[in-house]
Image 1 (tube, one colour):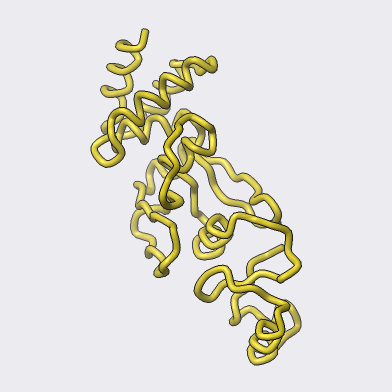
Image 2: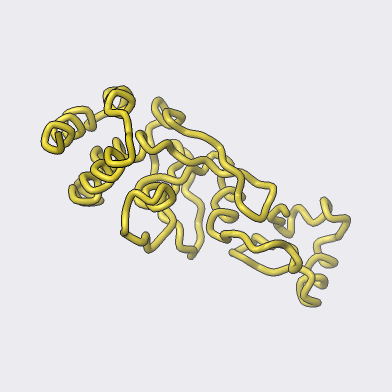
Length: 185
């Protein structure tokens, strides 16, 4: 299942007016402004679909990634998505919080995962990258979130060497991660 925009209706063999007619008949369902899916499509996370459709380089980060890895009890109020700095942040009223990350480190710890129920993929930062980012942005997220995620990650057998390798390549994260590792040891 791919998300579809009216401008791409030709991919489904429909004209734009034919696409809108099919939508009124219930064959397509609107998930966000300008983004539709087939009404019989399997269940999927619409925010993930919207982010991946609006920006192919979209990457789940920060609190949303910690929740994805079950490293926090915090339920994010919006899907945290990273895009490279300098890329236009999409307009929309959805529950997506767009974050601009430095292009030089954007791909560090990034992997592609399939969106359940669809044929699209979305980026997800590794556990180590996500924890390092939480420490790096602790002023925004809160120190407790980063510390608790680190504690849970270590309890599950996380390797501090791998975390420090990532943290040393990200600005403003090596020192706080090292301090937290010392405090938790």
